[in-house]
Image (cartoon, rainbow, N blue to C red):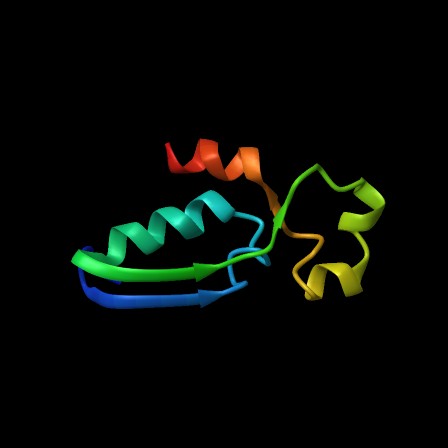
Length: 78
């Protein structure tokens, strides 16, 4: 998609399922028109999940295993 080409973006847990979360957020901002709207709903973890939990398919498909920590999102937004 072209830069500044989208009026509104709605994402419900799509970024949680991506191994490239920072890229997902960056792309949402890149393609948004100036003054465009973004509604992004994600599950956020208050602590890092154990590796075993991140590999459990049911937790991954329900967006739990792919959740970013609050600290990671704060760093990505800066």
